[in-house]
Every structure is written in C-alpha cells, then in structure tokens.
Amino acid sequence: MGFNGTSPLLDQRGELRPEDFGAIRELSMNPIGDRIISAFFSPGKETVDFASFVRILAHFHPTETSRSRDGVQPEPANSRTRKLKFAFQLYDQDRDGKISREELLQVLRTMLEMQVTEEQLQSIAERAIQEADLDQDDAISFDEFRKSLEKVDIDHKMSIRFLS
Amino acid sequence: MHVFLVVVPIVGIIAKESPSSLQQELQELRGSASCPRSEPEFEMADIFYFCRRGVESILDDEVTKRFSAQELESWNLLTRSNYNFRHISLRLTVLWGLGVLIRYGILLPLRVTLAITGISLLVVLTTLVGFLPNRELRFYLSEKVHLMCFRICVRALTAIITYHNRENKPKNGGICVSNHTTPIDVIILANDGCYSMVGQVHGGLMGMMQRAMVKSSPHIWFERSEVKDRHLVAKRLSDHVADKTKQPILIFPEGTCINNTSVMMFKKGSFEIACTVYPVAIKYDPRFGDAFWNSSKFGLVNYLLRMMSSWAIVCSVWYLPPMNREEGEDAMQFANRVKAAIAAQGGLVDLIWDGGLKRAKVKDAFKEEQQKLYSKVLVGEQDEGDTTVVTSPSDSGSASPC
Image (tube, rainbow over all chains, first blue to last red):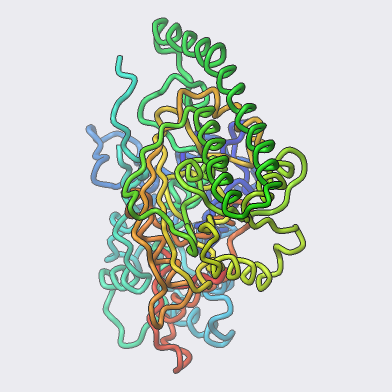
C-alpha cells in the first residue's frame, strides 16, 4: 500500500484518519479490524502522521534482523516485549494496564459475534481469566499476560517480512 | 540511462505465507503454547493471528490496488506515470520535454483528426447502409463498414495489437467474454471481427453512434429501466444467440474496469445462457501508455485525451478455445472456470473479489464467515448439517454471496 505515492489512502495533509483505513476491503473482513485501526492512533488523537504510522508498523519487523550492535541501545520496537505490549493493548482498550473481565468479554464478542450464545461467551471468558490470573485480582496484568504466552513463538507469529 | 527495462509485475511489498486456513494457523499458535487441551478453548494467543492478518491487509491487500493504475518498474517519460517525482538529471528533463512536444504537438492533433474521421464515417455509413433493402447486401456492407471504421479508430489511438490463436475467433451464435480494462477494449476486439455489442442506451454522441450502428447491425441496447430486469436481459440475449445469422455477442462479465493486473469476479448472468462461450484475454503493455480507465478519477473525454497523448497502446489479444457448460456445473462454477482460463492466458491474477467493491463496501457476510470459522475452533461444530469445510475467502471456488 504505502502511505504516500500511489496509495489509495493518500491523504493530501500527510495524515491518516480512521475512515481512511475503512477503504481497505480485507480489513473490513477482519473481526478485530476496528481495534487494529485504533491501535495506530494515540488516545485522544484523531490523526496519525507518517512517523507514528511507521513506528507502529515497526512492531511487526522480524526480531532476528535487528540485533543491537552495542548493549546500550534503547529497546527496539520489534522486541518480544514490545510485540506483546501491542497485542496487550488490543485487549486493554482503556489502557489501565489490566485486562478486565469486561474487556475480555468485549474482545470475544467482536471475534465471535452471532456465532455463540452469551453463556458460552461468559464461560470462555471465565476459563481464560482463571488460567491466566495468577494473583487472583480478577484481571490480567501485563506480566500475567506475558507469562501465559511464554511458550508462544511470538517472533514468528507477529512478524511481517518486507520484500526489499 | 535505461528507460525501457523489463517490466516485472508488482506482486506485493510483503512476503505473505502460503494461505493456510484459520484452523491451521491457530493450531500452530496453540501448539507452541502451554499444555495441549482435550477440548478446544480460547487462548490469549489467538489474537495474534487476527492481528497479523489485519496489519498485513493494511500494508498490502489484494483488492484496493486493482483499482488504480499499475506501477511501472522504470519511467516511460509520461508525467502521469511518474509517481515519485524527483529531479534526476537535466538530460532526463530535456528528453521528457521533447517527449511532451512530440506527443502533444504532433501525435495528438493527428490522432484527434483520425478519431473524428472514424466516428463520423461510422455514423454516416451505417445509417446509409441501413437504408438498403436487400438483406444480404446489407449484412455484407455493414460488416465492411464496421470493420473499416473501427480500424480507423484503432489508428487514431495508435493501438498496436497482436492477435494470437485466430483460429479460435468467436463464431455466430456464441458469446464472447473478455476481461475489462477500458472502453477501448471494444474497439480493439471489433477491429478484428464483427460483434454485437450489449449496453445501455446513452445520450449525446454515444447515443447517436448507438442509434446509427443498430440500423445496419443487430446490436443490443437496453433502456436504463430494462437493465434491472434480469429475465428480460437474459431473454434478449438468448434470442440473439439462437439466431445463427447474427454475430457473436460481446460481453464483459466483470462489470467494471479493472487495472489489467488481475481478473475479478465474473457476473454469472451471461453464463446462464445455453450456448458456446468464447473467452478472450486482453493484456496491455503498460510501458507505452496506461490504458486503464479510472472512472472515479477521470471522465471519458479526459481519458480519451490521455490515451491519445500517450506514446501508443500496445496490447496482446489471445483467443481461447471455446468452452461449454458441462453437466452438473452451475453458472457460477462455469464462470469461474472461464475466468481461470482467461487469467492463466493473460498472466493476470485470478481473484474472487467482486469488481463492484470499487464503489461499494465489503459485505458483512465476509466478516461473519471469519467469525464462524473462529467459533468452530473454540466451541466445535454447532450444526450437524454443516459438514463442508469452509476455508477462508482467499481460496477460490466458494461462491461469494454477491
């Protein structure tokens, strides 16, 4: 697609708005399409400029290729932690650092909508929280989230390789 | 300085994994997670699948780029193909300036003159031929007149056409289908044979041409109100096809102009009629001029002017062997089979998406299908009757609800 040049999302102002993403047909098909779109926008802001756009996309760079030469570089955008943080924020919409039961239910609802009953939704959410919630505060913090995904190959699953 | 390099079709800017189904991807995600469970359940990691697919779509999706002009590997000295304007060198700018002079000063006036000649001759001569009482003479002359006028129009665009496999040229009593890139497709095909055209009645110059043409040859023009009535349309087409003395009908089943890198969903209406289908693939060479008509960006006159001020329109036309609908095949499957043949011959990508998406939004049915697939993974099969494995819409074959 490309932010500028021939992109159908080309915007004269050099900024993107949420509606511009609506032009991407495949994204409308994705159940969490709206959440992904809002991940590009900082809370309270209605537009995203090119630099911020690229910063978000940098999360999806494959991890192997960005080994820091010296030890004192700031954590790269595509580190495992940052990728996890991105996914965490897809769940945690109010950015309070915890995934509450309600937030989990919301995500499940968008992913499943008409296909399951409310009771099934509740029980799925219940099970998920019980498993991940280690300190029993009825919410999943970022550390609990990270622990539950210890064995998942995040680097591979959350990476998009660019053809140069 | 290389101006003409080999054009490589732009495939995409990201490496997409081979399309695996939602089930497969989720299994992989879960397989690497904690202990495998006996019953399928929700995993926090599931979101990664949707997340990545979503961002991949933002970076490079299959559909949106079909509705804008194809990008070129190297510049062909036309400003309109110059997407990243950078001043490269004085020599290049001078060459470009020279090109502008030649194209607008010499080529354009010549072409416009030819075009006016061609269209006027078409209108005048077809009307005259229509007055002749003798039927055979009328058919014979009408064919000659149509061919001559379209040949003049082709020269007016400086279209350099290579026809392949002429032995498969459409015969009377059949339907010719082709991929659609521009209204000029009609002229390109009519240059080599006589077809009956199908279309809506227009006003103005187009309308005048339509009325003139139909006097000497049986074209099928529909009133705006009749277009909605599918049965009426089907009946008129069937009647025409049944009469073996009438020329083959020319139809573009995509319904809209696509940018010649892919073939989009064929509307099944023309494949429901019981007759032989003659597929034709048209592929334009984008180096000499981009033939795609982006109707949301340019009107028709503007588009024609751009065509006539390009270097040339170079294209290849392949006549494919005739196809018939087979036993047990429904119209949609037949349409997909023809589409695949055309895409394979023309080197185009075969997509299941509807060209109507140029203007319309994606139907919710697609999102629901994704949700359905995911729910199957979580809670297992809900209905007993639904035993077919539905794969994600990126595979062809499933009839999309359009």
